[in-house]
Amino acid sequence: MSEDHLLPVHRPPFVLHWDEATNPLPVRTIRGLGLAPAIWPAAVPPYYPSGPIGQPFDFCGHIRRLCADIVARCDELRHIDVNRLLFAVTQARSNRRFGLQARVTPLRFRDGRLIRRRRGVPYQVQRYFIDGQEILYLITFCLPRFLDQDFDDKFITLFHELYHISPAFDGDLRRHQGRYSIHSRSQKKYDAHMAHLARTYLRNGADPALHGFLRLNFAQLQQRHGSVLGVVVPRPKLLPLPAAREN
Image (tube, rainbow, N blue to C red; front, side, top):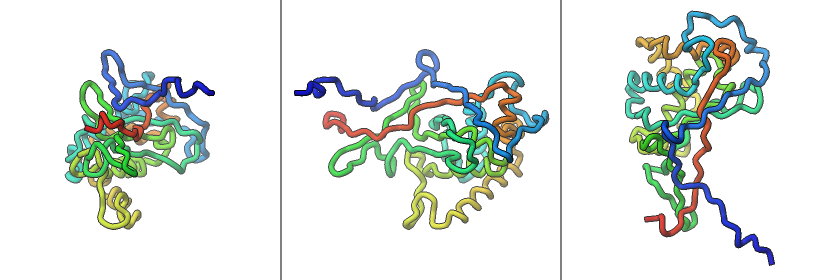
């Protein structure tokens, strides 16, 4: 008889904690994947600020500061508390320009519920805490691909992900009426609205020091800074709950 059933079963933790002092968020260097024909690196324009030249470029730090300014200036996004967002990256596997650019992962179920039942079994999304603050949304950017879009598309993608966050800011996604509850009935109208929000933000006094890095592609940032760094964390898992944890 096999004794496999006697071996301990590894289960992912229900809660993940990071803190700056003892368990900082893991940071990785993003690899370049060769050059697609449309994005050969030109000389890096000196008038687009991206931080100290020669020092590694902290992508997630720059995105966080930009998003904090966006939600402070955009009425439709002011419900967002950037302190409860975790910005991360994932490494693209090819230099194809089409595919995943970014995604927002909610850490709660519909209406902010912590537990959901499937076929009678209760499930919970892993909970993330940073310095004791619980995170409600994980926003992940696929690099280098995201940075190799043109400037307008980067901004539209950024607004697209932020707009997915529920107006209740309860860990759930924004839901629209009808069958297409996440992206609405018309993807074209949805994208047009994101473009409108992005352009309005840029027209109304947005600070170039915060968004200048989006004028550069991945190769240009790498050329200027030597490397591009980003936070890399596992995507939250959906875990079945033992009866003892359900309450």
